[in-house]
Image: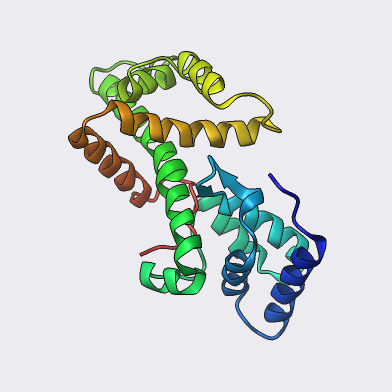
Length: 217
């Protein structure tokens, strides 16, 4: 990923600070900063915007003391943005390109991770209905249910296809989740893709998730 010129980085941070100081809600100022920030440093798979890492960086450099800490916690830890913005408003606020990059992250990372959680919950429920404790290999069972392969095998394929050099485990995991999304689209028929996606979206709407979404319809 290319390095961002310091001047443009600092200009965006300063503009965000000034907007908040002038009375604009920090969340709207954050969205504007995301809109203006060059996305190259925060792309997953070259096509999904890691807006969470970008948001955390912007908030950190703006100074959390200028932003409502409770709202930040609710946003990042409980998936609750302080302001609801419709899809139409979101597209207008950030522009078509950034919004599409956001959608790629939403479906390729957030929804895919939610699908794994939803399937794990189904497996737990199935065992509970039989009066049995959840199995220790519940995550492994979820991978096989969704992707028809063990996680270790899929990670090996992922590493082979994408190569080495990713900077840390957190980024590797996000890249892997996005890769799993694309892999699922390749191996599943349209009906299963639609069914799994609906299952994941229902999980997201259930209120038990901790996957933040930048915009809510």
